[in-house]
Image 1 (cartoon, one colour):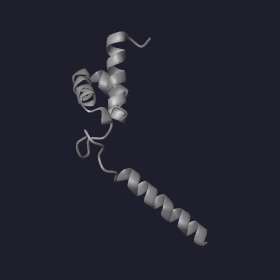
Image 2 (tube, rainbow, N blue to C red):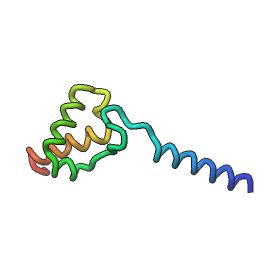
Image 3 (cartoon, rainbow, N blue to C red):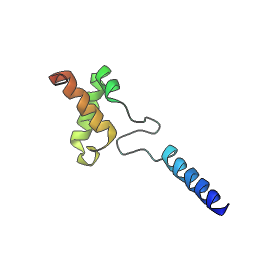
Length: 80
């Protein structure tokens, strides 16, 4: 019984951190991560995000940086 309670509390804590995590640097509150498809459909935003990532190398591994770069590569080189 105690084990079930501990597992449930652990799950609640992990879920809480996932849902209520602090925004990553370069993201405004509530903005969230954009998909590659979103960036392909919004090339101007992809270029802006890519410039932010280029200027701050600590952001380059974030989901928005990776997705915006991939979208730009698809848009300008094709998907090959």
